[in-house]
Length: 189
Image (cartoon, rainbow, N blue to C red; front, side, top):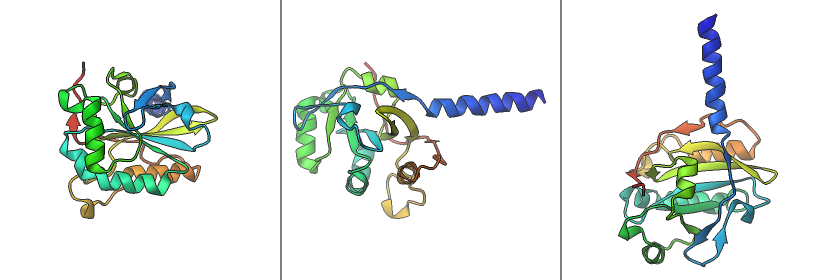
């Protein structure tokens, strides 16, 4: 009985970590110079935050998939790219140059003080956070990998982020709330 109660408590604690509330943040979109925050999107069902890098090969593997997700869900669940890298190749001017070279048109946000990265606990590029909007209060409902095969899109069997977005939009519980992301480590200040 004691083991069952402990297991129940562990499950409850596990679920509460996925309901992590996200404080409003304000980051500059290096492509427009405008500030972007959760309050920029008051009527969306949710937001996708993807920590990305100019230099990590995993981000290149995912670029087309991220663009497709953005096109498919932009009206209800906008996608934001966040660069928290502090190395010279991740500087704001390098971000603008990378966006121009790669045809990035999504909001590309600079988080050089790593406030959002630390608040969400991000440590890899590319790692994703799906936030649910509940009356202007955003909480994490999925975090981790985009899918199960970063390098070969044709071999993907599980589209974790897409499945979580579809479940969010259908008002269903997120079946898989966390999957360990793969990618490059983001160096902390």
